[in-house]
Length: 384
Image (cartoon, rainbow, N blue to C red; front, side, top):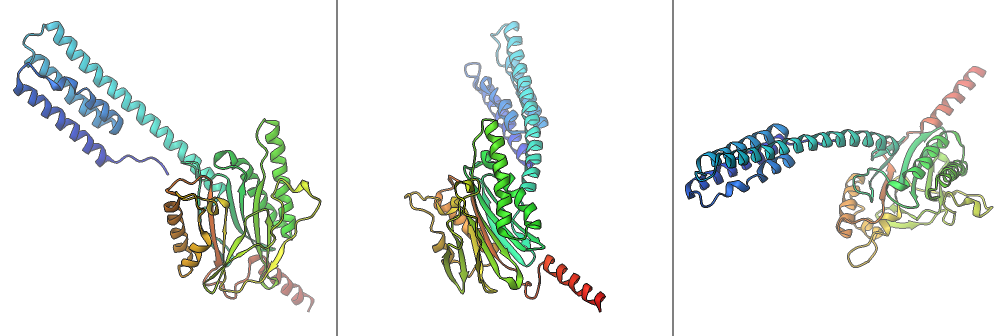
């Protein structure tokens, strides 16, 4: 989001300052030489410099200088010519300073806008905007970074359609905000690559582990912190069913027929980056969802968010209350409720993904499976 000024607001502020300056000057003209409040109106062009565009600031500064010259010439009969010149010159210096201040501020705002535009583009490339689609799967939800002004941080997610089925991942990097971006990017990039070329979720998780290990080595060499990442991987392979692989991630929620169930499928696996602590290989778990099931994935920034009384956010209870909502509406409702619950003060990055089959998913097959079947049909036809 780039910074945009409001011409109407600039004009309104400038007109108000001009009116106030003129009114005080006229009031001084009617009170005689004893009281001259207009001498203190040097604050007007400074306010304009901080709130208005350059042209409106110049207008306020010009009106201020003219009013000060009028006061020096007409309302100060006892002052010497030298004193009047010094007073007018002081007003001119204030006006010039206000213009320089305004110009500097506008240049900084323009630089900030360009920097923010580049940062937004980079962050969008790293973490796609929700909702996501992968074949017939739709993933609605929200992501809130704990660091103000950042689009991304320590939470990652992705959904892709691959030759091995539909694959979805949500992860949570140790730490939060900007310092966790590096590790999150390495894991996310490795998932996007491995999901297309590795036949099993276990092999995908191994690639993610290797990428994070390389990142940790580089980070340690630079004196940085080594990090681990919890992740939950989901795979849908048409008739072959669905598999879940947990790398130390918190449970997910299954919404079926209006009932919410916390699922611990695959629980017990170590987070990515800590796999070297055990020789046990990672194992995915087969699950059997039905067509109308919803799956809700989240990070601990949601379930461990605390209210004013110190209580954790009751995500399961909230889901049970709002199962009648459509996924996009549910995502907006959950985000608004989480902000109310925490008073807008999240201590960690928070992500929720609401995953379901789209309304036109019936009979649709992932692109990879369809391509494989087309090749098989062509081979059979050629053999015949």
